[in-house]
Image 1 (cartoon, rainbow, N blue to C red):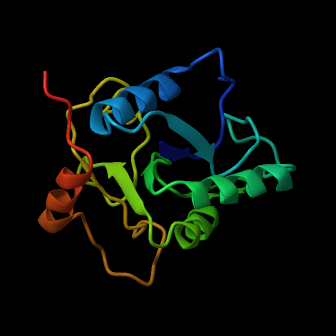
Image 2 (cartoon, helix red, strand yellow):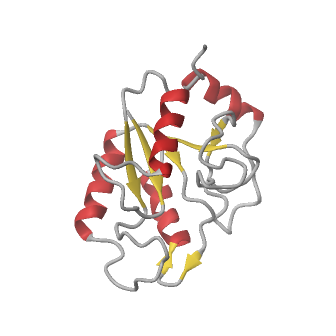
Length: 168
């Protein structure tokens, strides 16, 4: 099982899949063919696609579920987009908390040449492009103490042994 982590949930649920969920499922099954499934978590638990709410952004019960799910999985695909503060949402702070929880885990992003983990709606992905490789996500976009780093060729080679694309 692979766990994917985004910023905050949409109105999608177990029976209604939005385009972000659809893309993440395709990506996971394409890159991790033996995964057996995908679970999707978010930095915040409030459905708020326009980032207008100011309270109840992260429910305690949801935070507990996130911690428990992280303990259960080893492979994670992050798709938070650019982690910046948006009104009441402090995405950089939540991403740093996530980084601590993911220590020792395999953490991936769609590698489009950025330090951040792009959202499937990114113009280079547009919810359909499954050809980009996965690269290690190092959280350098939210850690101002680290120098600017990008995924290395060593990371790419290590990744190839873990999740190879399906052959057609």
